[in-house]
Image (cartoon, rainbow over all chains, first blue to last red; front, side, top):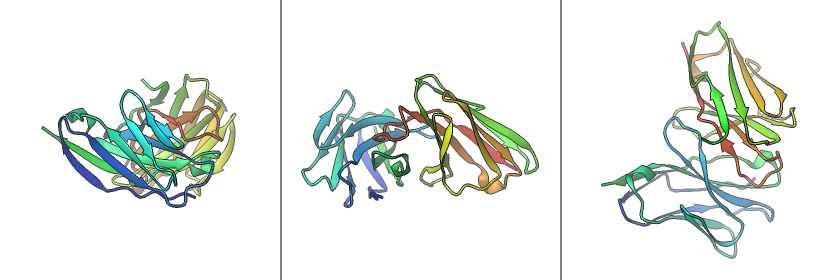
Length: 110
Length: 114
């Protein structure tokens, strides 16, 4: 079971780029890396998923180095509404690997 | 709107009550999940259903009883709960239970046990 480690909290200001790194040293060959965003009293929302190299969508980018032992979620030009908890999830090929860690609490300030 | 609807959004119950949480997904997915999120704790996976068959019971006390009558509906029946069971209960679905990690969550049901 791939365990993930993320910073507990981060602070940023509006308009800045935010990078949140997740460590997953024992990631398995068939594991994917998925990031979720959660606002208070709501369910987590899928942001982005990748297997290797770089993935970009309309809200974020995901950078995965060649050894896949870590990944970095990049949020360009954050706004106050990006204040949330961000979870890195590593798994694939089996529901029993869909284990959430503690997440990173991002606070965006004016 | 995620395509996963949970009702009720808020529920207060006594320790001797019996209540149920309902989840419905409109995504045509084959797998459904119940997660529990207590204050300041990570999400805990409780149950997994695939094509209406329970494939995972993560050491959940018997006072929580899931039911999946079809692939679109999932229930969590609650009875004789304890105050420590107060939490946000989240339902999720995915294309199938052997998936890469893309889950679609509902808004959650906030349960308070008095």
